[in-house]
Length: 152
View 1: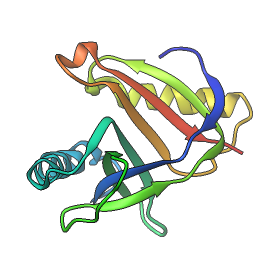
View 2 (view 1 turned 45 degrees about the vertical axis):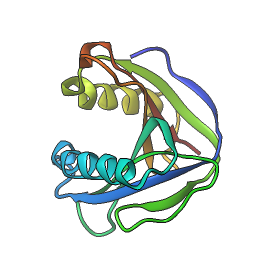
View 3 (view 1 turned 180 degrees about the horizontal axis):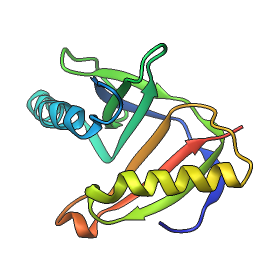
């Protein structure tokens, strides 16, 4: 993890698909269900989509479950599809941000350290957290993921 910083997140329109991670600890399984079919559907449709991939997580009220979203940036003229939704992620005026480098097996611990640092800094969570995959080609040991948490 790199240092904690605070900044504005710009709005972005994405092609997204979703699933539920029961109990919250099943996020990797939900991503594994979403990612290949979304990628294949976008490729088959020939729509314009771009990196970086953005994943976000929403607590489901009254449960320990998380709604998991997987997305890619939509091109200039987004089109709806049966296998995805066009989602406008809003701007976030203030978000805590850090960079995680490495294997996805360590991202849970990185999130824990990041959230702890935000709380220790006096931050309060103000919306769904996001992961933005800045570098996700090649071995996971070379991946670069930005962790973003809107804060009050």
